[in-house]
Image (cartoon, rainbow, N blue to C red; front, side):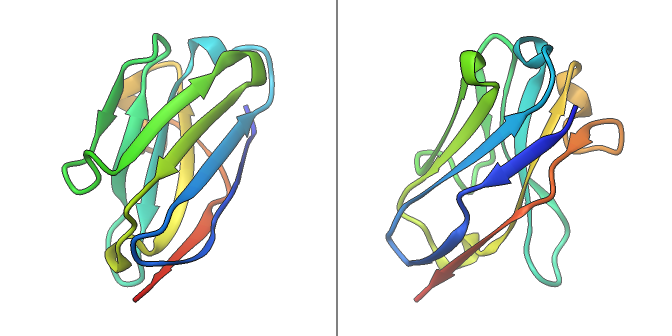
Length: 120
C-alpha cells in the first residue's frame, strides 16, 4: 500500500485546512486509517484515526476542532482541521493498517508527510 498525502500549507491561526491521503491498491476498505504529526523537537503523536467501519477517534488536543472521514470509493481519508492553533504546526503523516492498533507504529504503512504551518 502506498499513501500519498496532500493539502498542507500555511494558514493563520483560527483558519482551516483539509488534508487528504489517497491509498493505492484494492484493500482500502478494510484498512484502518490514521493521521499522526510531528512538530520540531517533539515526538510524533496521534492526531486521529478511523476504523474500516468508519468509527473515529481523536487526540484530546484536537477533539472538537478536527474531523477525520473516509471515502472508500476514492480510496481516500480526509482530515478537516478547523480553528487551527499555532501548536498544530507540524508535519502530518497518513498511516494505514488492517489492524487499527498498529497505526502509528512501524508495522503500519506510512505516507510521506505534508507540512502544516499555522501562523499567529
